[in-house]
Length: 383
Image 1 (cartoon, rainbow, N blue to C red):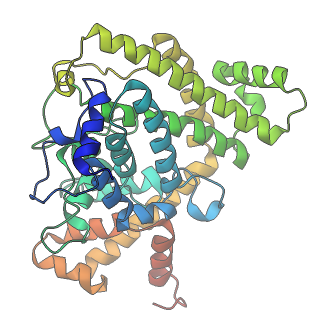
Image 2 (image 1 turned 90 degrees about the vertical axis):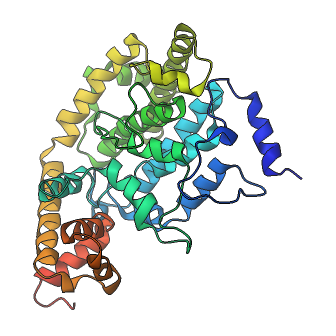
């Protein structure tokens, strides 16, 4: 039978720059260690069983939940990020358990209705500390989740919490606060999750965009990554069905990016002579990166998605409608806080009402927010 100390010893085969669970900076509230799970395995399990994680099933990526049941949600996206990140971590000799925990936690602070919901709350909270989903994610795991009698939140390890607050992509700009404000780059496990998030976003939004009909394949001819892989698939399987071909092209693009990433990251690790996890702090640039060639190939695909999907008139309509939903709900609750559920009202004794209302809305699923909106603004809807 393998106990925790045996599992920790197994981590000795990891790369010297990997974060070992026994060397974690620990938890805010001291707890006895588990007999059969490492600290990071325990964190991953706590995240999976959290309310915020389950709600990701009905939170939007790009398409609002009721637009169709095929499109990615925050939950399916999170699982896809975890799969890509874990594959990268395994190849680089990093701590897979830590990468998985950060992957599962990285979107816990997201609002309903994707980035439009976040934009709305940020504007509404402008004079009250603002809003961003990294900070909210840390707030969820440190404060809002109620699972234990001895402490608030999930009491996760320092490294997982750092991965939440320092999550960085072109859509996410971290605002780390004490004790996470150190300069330099975060540990490699955090960097892996960040770039796996980008890979998942780009390729799976491309998939959803084609499936929805908002993206036409003929327009993808200007995207070299797509055309090269599409040509390869057609040459190898000339009679392949279109639906299968689309899946295989996207799969091939992901594989191409991950392979390039692994090769370039290995070169970067050797260049900077990394020997410990903490060595990344002295390096201002990211270690887990694509080659310049791949960056050049990815840029047109990202520009294409921005022009043809994220700025498509139907997506803009969805986003604008969602913005109004969030703003109207916020103002209704703020005007008369007695309309909040009793458990949420109880927090008003200790916390400022704008933040309490913000937390309540941020925790909603798309479906719940729409139901609440109907109750307030449709006169014949039961409340």
